[in-house]
Image (cartoon, rainbow, N blue to C red; front, side, top):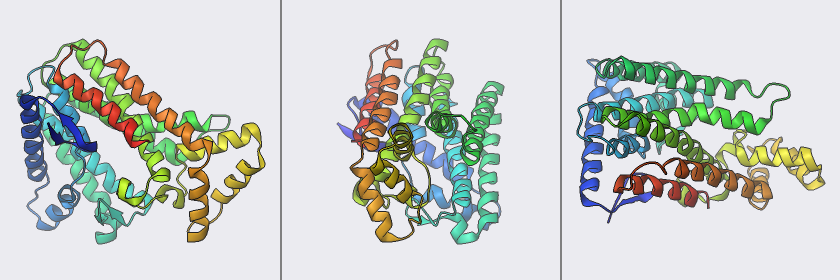
Length: 336
């Protein structure tokens, strides 16, 4: 039993393991090729995050979804390169918007080269993804365009915040559906579609990816509060310090508005203060870890992961389906 992909996913079948590993190796080669430019400076900037590594979560899903058709079909690997290039491009743009200094353990592109170069490098990656897409046919272009529209819409909704009278939790889940769920869904869709799987299978895997993507992000929200740096690979409470309203914080505010308990209101007030102060930040992190809102956020994560699991029911029993089900379990495990 060999470990592959994110979360230490184990693949029990040797043939499936070989297919997935070969596919991911080909994707890695494709990413390096797609980020080459005649201008060495552009190559360096475009390959900055490729070489920094990452889970390659989306390409893994492409490879697993392709098992429901012909996993060796010529469009499978290029489509996986497209989704990962798109994901990487959004990271360059996100780091500019968030003023991030580190990404995947290395200096962010905006820290190293400035905001303008980071934004333009993200645009370069989008252009290269589009170039590959053009060879995959008009349907692939349409699918990617719709997903990209949803992704950008999610980012805009996050920036704008909920409208008056809109439930902040519902708004946040809509944001995640666009920002994260859309591209994870397309990863599953491309894998199935490019492998020639039937329309029903493509639809099931797309729905699975949407729910798994949201669960994946919600698990990150929980980890940002609940884990230590060894578990999560990043400093605990990073989102908290930056004032990003992730699900545990939104669940706290929802409870405070509903019940009006003094301790909840006091914690909300603490979160609204300057958490760049280490003592205040540590106090807020400790209080959230002990608060029922964190457990509620865990339950939300489990709910989306279980919905993803349930969606897979119509698919035939096989090792690829078992691996997709295990991903649901892995997401729940990450959330504690």
